[in-house]
Image (cartoon, rainbow, N blue to C red):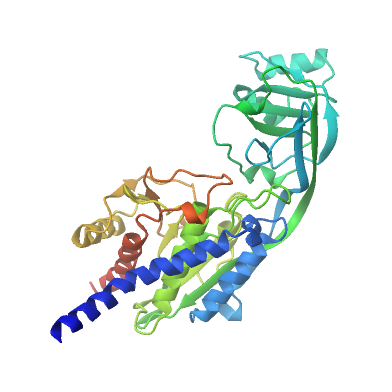
Length: 423
């Protein structure tokens, strides 16, 4: 009988953590599904993701500030829409795989005879001289990625520019899509150009610039049992790049469905009876990070409760690996909290390393840190997964190597931090 009891307890103990990662996997699958449209601003992917997070918060007993989980705000964004086609010498290329349209580009439906730019050291001054000599306003230029800087100011005054990119795979970003430019830029995979030369290029897609797109942060909390007016805060951005046209979307599993899943998992855990720590815990999931920390900046400027009541804030972004441990940005600033993380990790044998990093404004902790809130940003490290801003950053491939250990470390940190208030 005792053997059977031992086996039963061993089974129950082993499923405690596995249930956490099962929940996280479920969240990842939903957030990265095609129906979420890359959690961007074309086809309202951000709103679908926000409604899903809200339902999970409500189901898990997470409270809303003043009865509303959503904190709405506006941001400017240019969106690439409809059918996206790039045809070179009558051969259609694969969007997302062979080429990317820069997020700031206006819509286009034209056929060009291209002009090659082969100079290795063309600077802004010589580029301006070139376009003074030649009218390139109705031309498409093909050049190497070493001339990428020329595209930002469009010194060539070209109608469109194709950059043959030496990096693989191609990766997209939308932080430059806050405005719509007067020219088109296309990143092209280097082996997508035909060897015999390019005689014709056809570009076809639509775009829409939205000066004030209404989006939302999703925020909830659980009450602490001893000091409910003081908060520990977990944050992550749930948005990603969205769609480049109707057929190409960016799943954003590691960036940052992984951090979102962890915050939602922590909310589920602390929302269970008996798990609430002494302090209250707030869970803030931001939109607009990929557009330039828009959601976290708005929240820091318009907090749901006074920022002075935040004892500590932990931001989670890209936590899908972990074989080499974690890095704590701002760890050199908040040495006591970093030391606590290191001590817990050593005592429990969680992760391979808890590595310190200097202060940096590279994620959603930054707007809070700039307002004096004690804040760190944690990401995992490991060579087992390297997808970033690609169409192949998929949930089914994300290893979550250190997920359970990081989850345990954060839970222990919350309780240790709360216990420290007595000392």
